[in-house]
Image 1 (cartoon, rainbow over the protein chains, first blue to last red):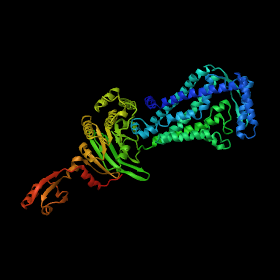
Image 2 (spheres, helix red, strand yellow; image 1 turned 90 degrees about the vertical axis):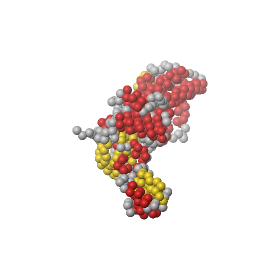
Image 3 (tube, rainbow over the protein chains, first blue to last red; image 1 turned 60 degrees about the horizontal axis):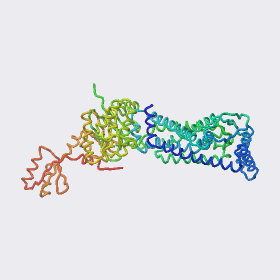
Image 4 (tube, rainbow over the protein chains, first blue to last red; image 1 turned 90 degrees about the horizontal axis):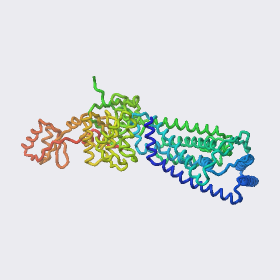
Length: 326
Length: 304
């Protein structure tokens, strides 16, 4: 089995896709770092102060002003109210949610990349794992070895899990190392608030507690890893079912982008919460952002994603084991 | 004790979407034998071969490779088998050596020494560390064979092994396959639609048409019954009349007559013609190509 996984790893590395992904991350992180830096500078200039309390106060006033305008759609107003409560809570407890530093950047980057960017990168690796063997004809050599089919597929899946972990690790390291040049490398022990519960338009703060930022980041990266594994598994199943890598990518791309769009408009369509793509924003539960559909919780989303993942694993293994290869 | 055949196929059938593609094939391959699988496109050669190597599951019937059932003892059966199905598609982004290493890792019985051995056997030692993407088709074919030989198989299954090779390559491949059968005691199953190929390469042939084996025999006996004599004579009609009294006569191309070859009588027929004042310009005994036989047996049907 170790040999089989080694073989699959070898192919992933030699196809150079992983390096392209690293390169994409290595290029994106500085761009976003610069954008963040510019934003901080602008805010500073506008308020003429570096004091984050003043900045946060200003942000609260801005949000209040937006809320008082009457044309706001209802669900957006709800979202703003929750944000307002949260900002107020941070201010009251004298905690700066945006204090500069590489760890903060890592956290914000992970929160923004979890539903689209990272799943896309994972998809690029997972999409051709099986389909490329089918379209290249090498599947015939692979399946005529004295090795059972399910073992071959399992070795591919394990290799995928390694690749996903490596991608997440690289995102963490690169985002820390690169953004630190601008923001400094400190901030691991900064206190963060978590445990917000949203109920309708109220933010319940009874369970809110403080944790160090490093714990918070670890938690968020765990969720990022989980989301990537789920998306990777779904792509993996499609890769078993479809011979064309391009088609696999197309379908996954459509699903992920549809998810990103749906999240903003499904608040009244209750049953949409069982779709995997509206459940990808797991980090929102940690930082207390209002979920796209009322009643969604971290536990609910994880369960939905797990069900999707297990179902696609069952489909992938059953089909791969039984299929006639032409 | 009776020797276990390298391959034994019993009443193999495959139905795809209610259409029976393979209709009950049975045949046996013995040790050191080169067996040809001959049939027009669409006769079911590839489907059969894919069932033999475990890529397609048969609807019914058994396949035993060195006595191991492909369906129930997949691992054991595959250990005895080396194969190339259609083109030898290897990983183009790896070198030849890395490809061999890759397949060696999938079978613990393969030693590191074996890699160099097979590379040498197929004559790829010089280019073995180059990327497969840069190989010519002939070299890929050879690497494909090297890959198939890695596990010291008892049975080698080659689907269209000379496809796309130049004449020198075809000859080389032929000699190599014969060498393997003779010196290594390997049984080889070769499929082809090139009849001349099979004729030169194989000991026995199965002719397959429409999912059925319509004939299995040694190449010699298949050809023997088809030997003919081609006569170039003048005047042709008189000669035809005379010969018709003795045997079956057909008119061939270019003003020729064709009769069966019957060794004891052929001289008498000639004498008769000469005595009747007919000029016998040319007499040619012709071993027919398997092709003629094939067309005869299959009724010249080609389907895709």
